[in-house]
Length: 228
Ligand code: BT5
Image 1 (cartoon, rainbow, N blue to C red):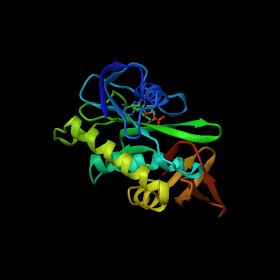
Image 2: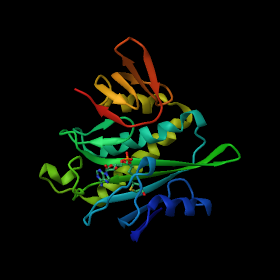
Image 3: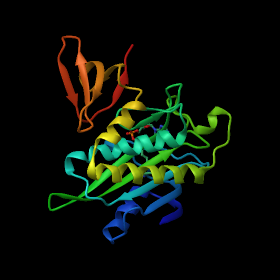
Image 4: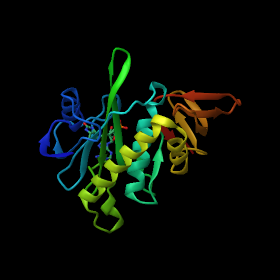
């Protein structure tokens, strides 16, 4: 069930409220504009006027807690796939155009009840027709073609549900699909205080980075900067 709203603070907040009221797996909210769109770590997600996707999808599946971080990775795969073959993922959740600028981001928020995850609200912002005035941002239409916002939203919803359902039984398909779309693996990166070569993903979705002294560090959260 897809709810459409014109203006809201954050579709993630709205969908969480619906979920607490018992909304089923697959419920989604698509907004034209957000006044308080959120990124990770207290950052903002901008929604300049234009036909962009500001979307939240409810995942209510018995995903083992150890695999919850993979919901974000699966959503990033779904979004990059919908955007097109040239789009790549920077760990963990940025979808980048081939020039390295960001076209989409994911904010997945899990709700816990008595120590058990009861649902995950997966928020996805895709700049379809217009990017905010940031040097690091771009939009799908920047490739010179016009993209249909509803088609993008529909592709992302289907993909998010498909990949998150696959996590119930087996984390490997999401991990492998993410690796195949990665802009990070093999690159020299700095993440938190660690600088080195990004070797691979761990089974939990963490990033394995080999520093120049040969040690392998596993990073579970943070922002990757490409170095050199
Ligand atoms: C994200 O955070 O990329 C997660 C974005 C999730 C947004 C969706 S929209 C629907 C749902 N409802 C919400 O309230 N949120 C979700 P992060 O990795 O922290 O990236 C945030 C950073 O990206 C900002 O600090 C800016 O530098 C940059 N940024 C902000 N808005 C952008 C945009 N529209 N396009 C590209 N970059 C942007």
